[in-house]
Image 1 (cartoon, rainbow, N blue to C red):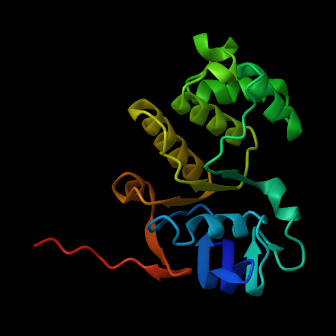
Image 2: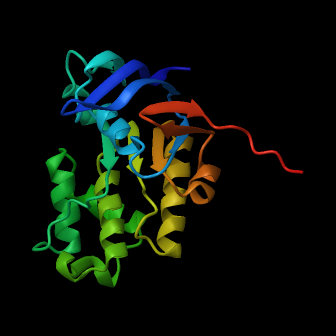
Amino acid sequence: MAVAIRLRSAVALAGRFPVLAGVDLEVGAGEVVLVAGPNGAGKTSLLRLCAGLLPVSQGEAEVLGHDLRSDRRAVRRRLALLGHATGVYDDLTVVEQATFAARAVGQPAARGARALAQVGMDGRLRDVAVARLSAGQRRRLALACLLVRDADLWLLDEPHAGLDAAGRDVLDALVTEQAAAGGTVVIASHEIDRAEPLAGRTLVMAGGRLHDREPVHVA
């Protein structure tokens, strides 16, 4: 199996504080991995490092064949990061936002329309201003903007947060489809019960390091 992410003793700093303190991680292409752990454990920092947004101070880091220590920009064209901030613009309509996101990555406007259909926003919400959307609707729109990238690697940070039950089901289906098509997904979440069924394996982030999750024994 090809390797999508390979980290060896990777260290990342926030100022002088190590937010990642020697992380080892290997994720195969087409794999879905859950990184669990409480807020502040380093999950977001891990995703930002893999996205080339947080520099590697020590160790080795390779994502989609790119060495992040020598060039952490090149990998960004091939991945999609869904973070806490939605990154959508209040002064655009839903369809304008999706079209803008598609054009920004060299995709036709039709790709934006298809992404809206995939997240269930191609009906009456299509021409609604982003400023008028609920938090859950904005989250769905951000997911549509992720879809237009047709990325090889998805990095999802607390992706179920803010979504209603139907939105969570949409997200779960999209993750399953992405993996079935050969895409790789890393989910950072503290909602283990919701996210773990999507993943092939679960790791736990604690103290800036990753650990195997201990198996749960049923009496």
